Length: 277
Image (tube, rainbow, N blue to C red; front, side, top):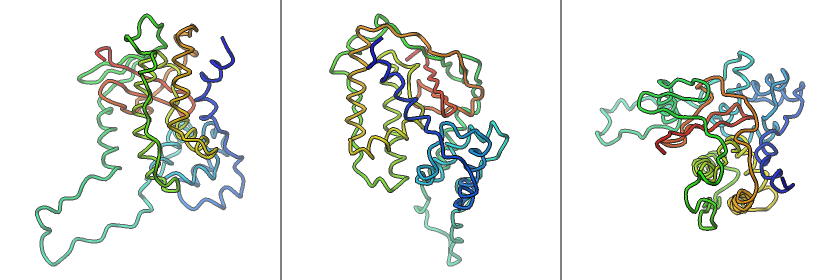
């Protein structure tokens, strides 16, 4: 196997296992929120592998911070604070009369996330399978080329991520962009037979900042990587899986689309695909 192929296979690991700086008194003294204090506790307990540096962690919005801390906190039996706990309370309803009929507010992102989690609440994680009321998903493996759809490895099959054109200091804007990009990245990796070599969302997030900090367009670099993966996949054999680990709880999982569920413990990613896809 070529050095280039090895480099590409571990791309997610390189970006996703940034060891957080040792948690000392300075970390806790600099923590201003419950999530930041929890971050310091987790690192102090030796469970910080895969977490970003303290500076990068603080750049994330509270929703992403909670997502990053959920797995390691669970391993330590620690509770993750509500990301919205420090948000100012909404103003009380006007006492001047009932609200207009057309003033119904749109659901918040937190409510939408809760709805998404609810879609998995009725599902069961059973080793290499996830069973939901209406559908069953199987842990995908890397596939030989004779099991791929026609044209999967051809130049016309592109990853097709859009370039980020917003404000990189706007954590919420970055999160929305990466969420949409990740939902496109995972199915494309499955399509070229590399579903067992995908980055976790944490690694994907870290890759974005690493690449963009280097002055390189994230979407362009990911397209180049995707092209190299397809080229190497044509001539090099891959193992079906590179480890025997399995996710331990459905809480580690999230829905990508109707046919794909992804689970991760920050360091390891698992992709489950519906056989009907």
